[in-house]
Amino acid sequence: MTDNTLAHCAPAGSAAAAPPRSHHGWALVVLLVGAILPPLDYFIVNLALPAIRDGIGARPAELQLVVSAYACANAVVQITGGRLGDLYGRKRMFMIGMAGFVVASALCGLAGSGAVLVGGRVLQGLFAAILAPQVLATIRSVFSPHEQVRVMGFYGFVFGLAAVIGQLGGGALISLHPFGLGWRAIFLVNVPIGILALLGSWRFIPESRTPRGQRIDVPGTVLLSLFLLMLVYPLTHGREAGWPLWMVACAAGALPMLGALLAVEARR
Image (cartoon, rainbow, N blue to C red; front, side, top):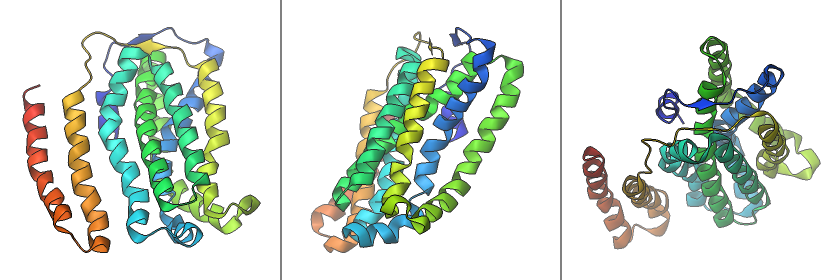
């Protein structure tokens, strides 16, 4: 979710029909919501882990995956998400990413077990990776070069603010216990915000795409997914499971999988 990664997904020269001047402010608000939600949901869970453990009896390995599964899923799909926007339309992929993020947030907030919560976090990470790259790409295609200077200032501020708001907001929601939701509020709060952003994107964000010269890196995405799965799963579950032989072999196999990934990417 870095600026460099997102910039890679926003090729120069992409164009969109500019929205009416009166819509620019609302378009920016919607885009900034899309920018802050993905990093916010990475940081917001940290202070909630003890409450999640007590609330649904999540095991230590599941608590680790609540954080790492989101980050891994996001990392795997991030660049692919940007290319999907180039090919099929950034507004369309922004809306798909936001809608999926809302549904995944609801799944996390309603989870009754650690396994369901981890599954919801994986979905959150996947849809966040589709959503996030569309923000910078849309900014660069909608706003003039002069406007982009100011807009990028807002973007950088909001992106950096996500870590602070995530920690403070997560702690505040757990302490305030709104509507008796407890830790579930840190996920369910995304639902109304996401729905409003979804409606705003439909109304105020124009469509744009850059179909030429783009290709989905399927082999690279598959190999990266396997590498992260073979590495992260044993590291989070190995100690609790007593490090059976198959887990050790799985972790050891991550290294040649990384080599295969690097070889495939070097030939591209």
